[in-house]
Length: 124
Image 1 (spheres, rainbow, N blue to C red):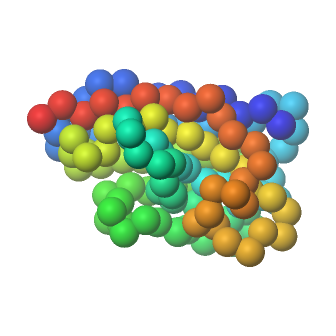
Image 2: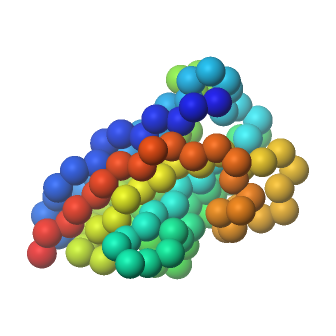
C-alpha cells in the first residue's frame, strides 16, 4: 500500500490543522494506523495511533487533549486533527501502517509502510 499524507502548512500558534493520510493500492482496514513526527535534528517520534476494529486511540503525552486521530475505513483515510498548536509542534508529520499482530503502537519499528511526510510549521 502507498500512503499519501496531506494537509500540512504554515499556521500561527494557537491555530489548528487537519492532516489526512490516504492509502492506495491496498486497504488500511484491519491495520492499526499511526502518526509520527520528526523535527529538525530530532528523532522521529510517536504522535498518535488508532486501531482498526475498535477505533481505540493512543496519544503521546505531549499532544493529549490537543490532537485527535480518527479514521474513515470507507475512504481508506486516517486523519489527525491538531488544535492549539505551538512552535514545538513544528515538524514533518508522517502517517504509517502498523504490521499485522504488532505488539506496540508506539515504536516506529512496528510500522511497515510510511507516507512521504507533510510539513507543519507553527509560527509564534
